[in-house]
Amino acid sequence: MNGTTYHLSGYRLMWVLVMFDLPVGTRAQAKAATDFRNFLLDEGFERSQFSAYGRFVNGKEALEARIRRIEQALPDKGDVQILALTDRQFRNIVHFSNQDRRRARENPSQLLLL
Image (cartoon, rainbow, N blue to C red; front, side):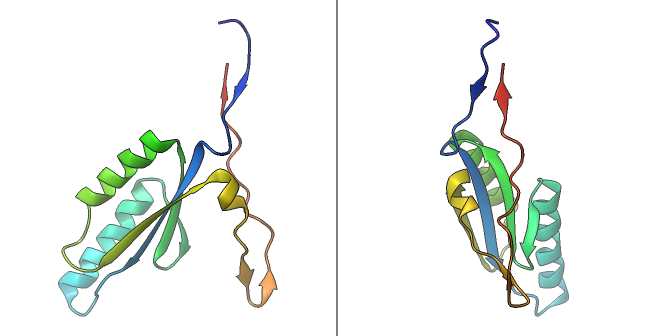
């Protein structure tokens, strides 16, 4: 190692947003929806809204790996959409809560490779 520090680009670091609308009309459907939400939490996603979860990933390879894992855990019915944003795009999300504008989200500390 030569002691040089490299910063990863805010255009390489990404956020994965999973948005879904799952049926819950039967007990089995409600269980499948709960299992899917728990899967996302177990995978390190954080709940943004009831049917919207986000996770920070390091690049397109990690994004594709997450998408494959989500695909394997999909419930039989319902709609699931996955949106990928660069870290820089994610910082520009405007968030209102109870009619008040919120500060921009704190992103995880930038990764360093030594």
